[in-house]
Image 1 (tube, rainbow, N blue to C red):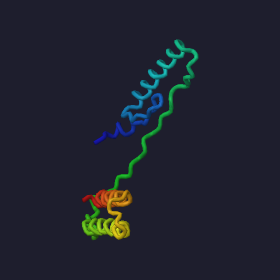
Image 2 (image 1 turned 90 degrees about the vertical axis):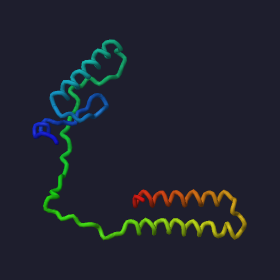
Image 3 (image 1 turned 30 degrees about the vertical axis):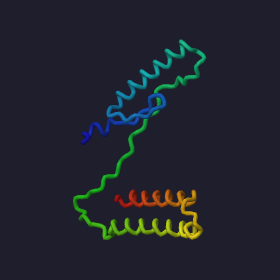
Length: 135
């Protein structure tokens, strides 16, 4: 849990091309200055480098997060049966597979590349069902 001072002093800070979250704005400014000084040293050693010399680099306040108040909100379980939805999803994948392979089987092409593609598609569809419904 953050302290109020950490929230008010925190900042998103750019050092070079990287943005980093800092709890302390002064630490951000010190790191930016240090980075800037290193760039100046490099520019003196390698004058042909195209290094920006503007300092300090930009900073921005972290985005404010919405925190809902759950204390007075009753917990309501969804009425949807996720397992039934998962089973229907798998059934749809299987039905789609059967519709794809029926003509192949009727024509004696059970060993064809189309049959393999249909099986791969069915496996992908069932994998999607498992991800969606967490089964």
